[in-house]
Length: 426
Image (cartoon, rainbow, N blue to C red; front, side):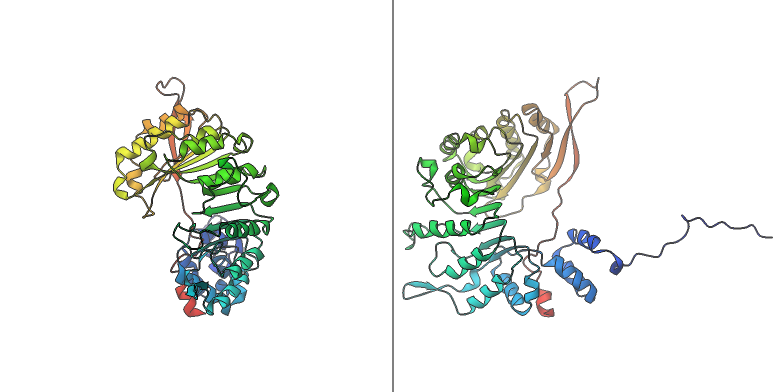
């Protein structure tokens, strides 16, 4: 008689998990690790996958500096208004609007209102960025201003060059200020504001009233402000108590000391800042101090980005000097526990991470020696490090540095070429 066999639950083969049977939460998690074009292809698998990933794909869309794709997206929304309702975050470029001069005035092509209608159909959007047109100071931009004012936003990003001295509309500063103020007053739920390339230089930084007439009630809930240094110095005195994070652009040796003096006059506002991101033109500041840190004594998280003119300047000696300079500047930050260091180029976006990662352990430990409260470091190679106490009796430094991971950039945002296949499908 053959021996009896006992079947163990651990030996029982489970049927393979089918992609279509996964819950929505797992599909959303999977999408984080996929580029948008892969999500688009999954949507073409069958109707069920399309209904799942369509909601994910159109949730966050980034088409900054992509005017042709922006035009295609709004054309898609004209054909499929149901997709517009899925959008929660959008960065778009409206240079396709074909603004032309007629009788000395700027006018918008007849195709433009149809695209604006598609833009207005995104009724569930809460984060919006607009570039490509001077919609705050250009003539004939009221329709765009009305669309933006009709949104209910928590985040607004304005990518707009200030008029040059030779521009005939530069004298219309009052209109620019009035339009910006109207937009801010129409967004009572605004938490994050970015004014990229936007310059307010005649405000409280010069001892006068903020030029656009912003009151604390206009930005009462604002938590994060990103702008040029002079603009922040103009708005900071009237910012509400919720403001805790600043991103200061284009800090250099020419304006550093003046702005640091200005910030020192707003101790109540600067004392509330807990997160600071400083973008420094490194070629003009490498031999100077960073007085901004003295103006924000209570920061807990500090990110510094060194801006270089060209990748040719990014050499190992410069990276080492960057570490040494930052170490010498964080000595008076008693609450700092997280530091992030990075580089970027004025005309090229991606530095060589392999070159940036070749930094000695001594330079990393020097940061901890300069700032004993420091716990985490993200270096220019996007590696994350933690500072841990050394074991008793090991001698040497009281702390050691240990790598815990590499920063990961998710693919959830729609980018330049991702719409092509869907356009054919639509």
